Image 1 (cartoon, helix red, strand yellow):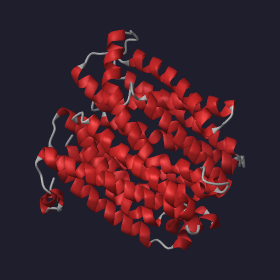
Image 2 (tube, one colour):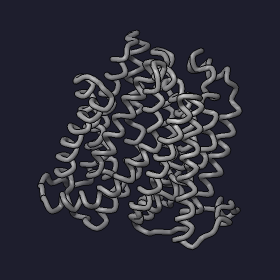
Image 3 (cartoon, one colour):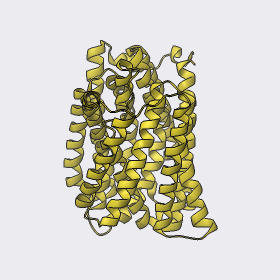
Image 4 (tube, helix red, strand yellow):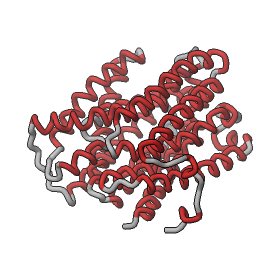
Length: 409
């Protein structure tokens, strides 16, 4: 299948995923309110940080590993690593967030299920089984919304536990269905080789370290905003809705990044990456203009009166969302070429900028301060990766100007 068709189908899957995630945000916001919406954001963010940590073995780095080890069975090593890494992460999360044992137990099970599901997705992607990959991509948010809808609206069970039950249902269903799809084409052997495990760690650690730094770069200010004062969860509840709306702009760029990563790992082409970057930037800026043009009354109508000014709460983040597209697309190329150290430096710089500015601006400007700090950090990362990419691939800034040929497939 042609690359542009693969990207288009993946973008469609991401749109469906976005739709169901939006419906989840809508249901939680209207039924549980801003404070519990903030609590759900803490849970989701914590789970996905844990998944990123466990994906040192079993994450996207396997795409690079399997191209050199086609016949390797990685199931046993991945499952064992996920079990122990999720246990350790749950303990760290409880300590860092000052939560009780029950929270840690939930985080362990949910992170473990999600990490195994993520591994199955990566295995499908590495074998170029794009249809199966796209299907399981939107499966988890679909099940999450379906169960949540039944509990909140049919059974009128409007408590935080409804969200927890829906999370478990979505991850369990996604795990088993993705496993069955993988078993259709893969002969799985549950053998364990310590040397193979060490090779997977050596391959995966620098990759996932860069990915984890990216996640912290994108989400660190969530925790800083939530922990600022007693109204932190309320602010985060409103702010996270704004983030969900703004990050919908990344549907196409993220599809480009995912498919371009797999394509670059097999056949690198900096010119193709730049072409997709130009298209991604154009689509993203158009989408941002459309979002900004939506009247505030519509947000109140959709999410509830407590979210009337959600657009203004994240107004300073609009430029940052557009600029971060550069990091997403060029980062996929550099990660496929195993430029892990460069990506780690870029994201570490972004984290340092974000941490410094959040400490200065959140106490004075709260949500606006968090958005502005994120935009400055995203801009710094975008500038660094753009300069680095253009230098090593011998292109210039003029190559970012869209061309008519970009639209011809």
